[in-house]
Length: 322
Image (cartoon, rainbow, N blue to C red; front, side, top):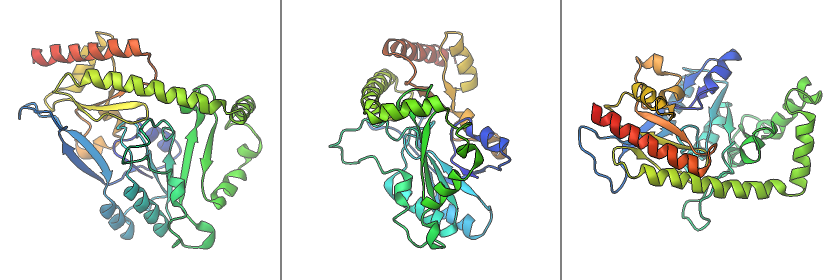
């Protein structure tokens, strides 16, 4: 199974528990400082863009170096980086998957949590399943397209409603429908959850909740970003959707030690290295060593303001003590 680097921090164990072998997608790492910020050479910290190296991926697939069954990606507001796979990358990924007969499983749970203005020049790209019809050079007619979009109401309505949906080519949907645990009506989505979501969708209640969530998350995200901007030693890109802000500290900072320092002040964050399941293959080297993931979705604005300010105070004290 090919996965991005970094990726959702729990996905490696989920796949391995099902007997799957993980391989890292070849990534292009582009580092840059944000416009308008100046940083000293010693404490230079650059935000990292991680994009799939399609030339290298195609070379590996052509040489049969790694016989992958599928590619797992989070294409929109990725967990943890909050980056979005550009349109041209989605097209190339869809074409590669059909040419080599490899399924793309797109975890699209953040796709609808998008608050960018409709007048912006760059619109949110379509879901990966929408690219199945672009490439008809598949191996046979009933295998038209290899992209599978998976989403959930847990992110756009309520975490307690464990109901989602899958969009995929018809032959894949037929295979899923034939599984016993699907036909039994249990094990995947409880009956009550299905019943609740059917009513809420029928009466357009989910749409209203989604609109409120978008507005609330936009306010929370901008609140945190505005506070973070006051420290020019921390780099980040302001998201236009999703749950997370991916921040970069100076390379001189030991983030494991800094996290312990923050926990003493009752502030916590997700270490970037938690999201890289391949560090051991690279002698502990990773582009995530100085990175951290902040989540703005599960706290109210007052808590976010207090927590973000406390994070910056802790960083200032820790940095000055070094």
